[in-house]
Image 1 (cartoon, chains in turn yellow, purple):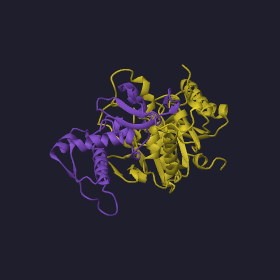
Image 2 (cartoon, chains in turn red, yellow):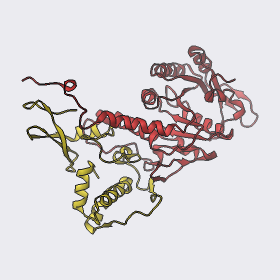
Image 3 (tube, chains in turn yellow, purple):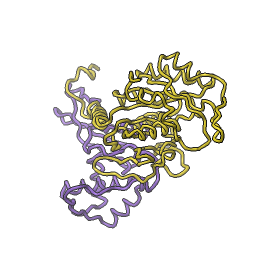
Image 4 (cartoon, helix red, strand yellow):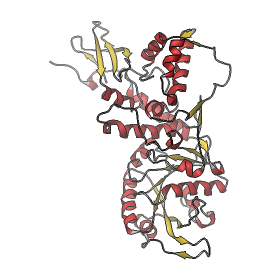
Length: 278
Length: 148
């Protein structure tokens, strides 16, 4: 049998999948047109305090008078809304879905606002071969969080990325205007190795590396203020040198339980908004 | 995706879609030259795969709703969303039959507000005064709504 193939048959296909995807992308661009700067917060591994740092950065920038939003891209282990004090339900109107408002007026959106208390991330799906579309669904959720949440006018939208490298490529493709990513590490050699891999993956995904935050950089005694070492290593300095980026902040562990990052100690804050600024 | 009527060497045109509610999807395509019609029948896995992209086979007939993919696929809490009334002129009231309300009640709360608004908008556009299960079936077919 002889017949023409796809490109030989002229005219667009009836489903117009390409234009449908294009429209999705256009919606993201329209929404993010009101966001001054989009910055991802990443790490190569869990447990380094990435969410704590994201919330701390949001509050610190908010204290400087900036309008800040936080998108929780850690769909399966969402915590940043709770850390910031944002809660649901969320309102839906013709504009889209409105984010929760957390401490300091930070706008936050997260699956934590949508899931039952304690329930794992779960999708309605056929029982077999879930791996086939789970990644696509998660990327689709991130797409909708960018395009359908009414972020409004923001100076800064922080994306709290999940540990590892899974969402880096999605972020680069969904939000081509993203300014870049900040990598969070703890001082240890193990963390350095994992975060180094993730930073390399981010760079390969086309994301600019804006800086490194070293979290749990020593223990600050709440009584006397003495700072002592918590983990051996100098991952923050090493990663900053390896990738030629600034060490944005070195944050000591403080047993306060909430991300009250001392603004004055975050020497590199302005760099996140304006690379090249002192 | 294009469908070619090999006998006529003519690109077939999308005719209609059917969403039987069992997780599968069907779309009919017709040859404008000879009138032959074929149906694309997608199994639940294929249907979900397409849906997970947030696109619709045959083209989109309804504007994408806010968080449509998330709300129609995530297992979420009942009280996650509060639907606000549209601004401006109050929309013409649409009645719901008892059977239609029963059916709507079976839709998970997580997505019910969005589904209710879609059916009401459809009824207004079609000049339908009362939403019945038959109207819901027609809307699902016309709008390509799965699991709604």
